[in-house]
Length: 168
Image 1 (cartoon, rainbow, N blue to C red):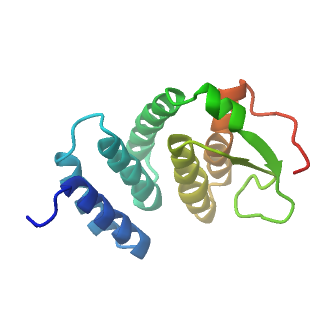
Image 2 (cartoon, rainbow, N blue to C red):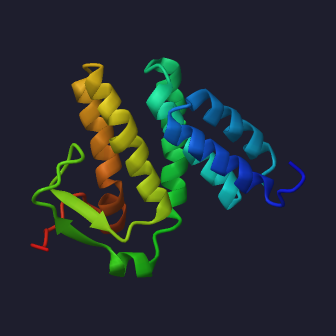
Image 3 (cartoon, rainbow, N blue to C red):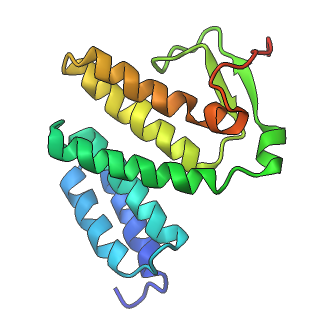
């Protein structure tokens, strides 16, 4: 549509809406079109890749081809997130014990003040892929990817995934 100035944002918004509605093939189509109008390495290009990862975590057959692509994507996202660990983030990040919320596989700790890229990794692995793997009976795989998503940030900020909780 020529009335839209930021075509990348338009396609991203459409893709996200299709994803939210469960229309995954339409979401992937919008991602492919939108990615072509982005400058490589731009925030929007990276955001399209993250959204594609999320849609594929929900829909791709869990086979060797997908696992290889997922490994490449997670490595890329991990590198991108690592570049965004700032002194300010380290200072503001703190754990908080969650006593009543069991929305994820690892319900005991929720980290606040996450950066976009590490939060995206958590959502892709712990919120999209792990529940799907659990439903398919792949419990070990589900736990492994969930833990990778949940504990990436403290591991890369503090050097360990095990830090003392505060009682919130």
